[in-house]
Length: 157
Image (cartoon, rainbow, N blue to C red; front, side, top):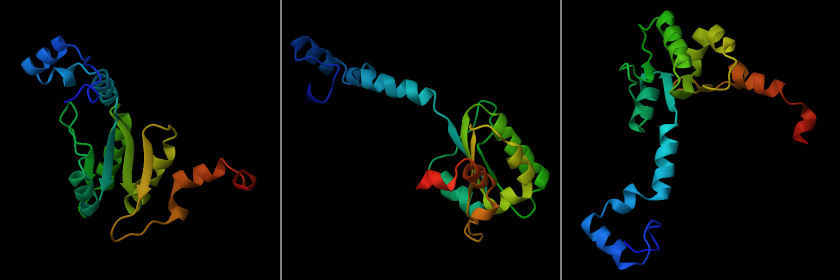
């Protein structure tokens, strides 16, 4: 590692001696690393309510987490999953302060449309996404309809 790469080192021999004694010192005390750690501490999770393929894809992408109460940030909706369970999970995701975005398959969102329409806060953001077997239909997306209502045609000219 050279002094140009590590911002916490000067070119003094004492710094290089300290580095040889403890190579991770530059990482632990780097101001840039500290800032990233602080930002990560304030980060929020993505939650997913979807079919098996959707949840598997996002879990393979690394979104899977358990909160301090050992509750996951995803729900795999299967044929025997009740609408009550989907709605309770959605409301529990809304109540969690560690979730910033909720992704939900649009065909599942249709099942709990009243709960999604009742959510008026910007965080967590609720985004309806397509699934493998159900394409996205913009006319059914209440969040998109709400966003369109905020702008007029002249705003886009």
